[in-house]
Amino acid sequence: MLMVTMFFILAVGCMAIDLPSLKGRQRRRDRLVYFVLWIGGLAASVCTLLGIKVPSPLLFLAVLYKPFNDLVSSWF
Image 1: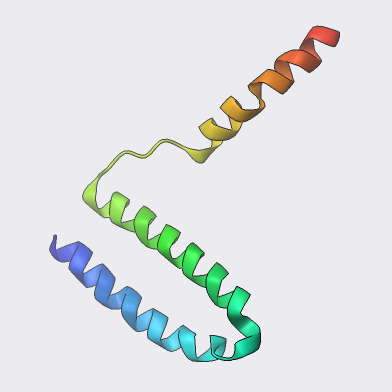
Image 2 (image 1 turned 45 degrees about the vertical axis):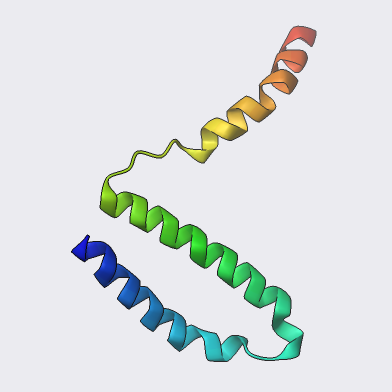
């Protein structure tokens, strides 16, 4: 748990350095994308630190495209 706490302290420090460049009205979408990617990275890092096994996102793509792949393979 100490590693997770240290990681969050480091992440907040990095975020404090990056955020001033994203201030302003015209960069609202940039901030949204920044926060979504930042939260995804934080979640992945915390899962790694805690040893939680997370399935690969490529498995989701394989399940998503399997019906299309089966259809095309039946043609040939």
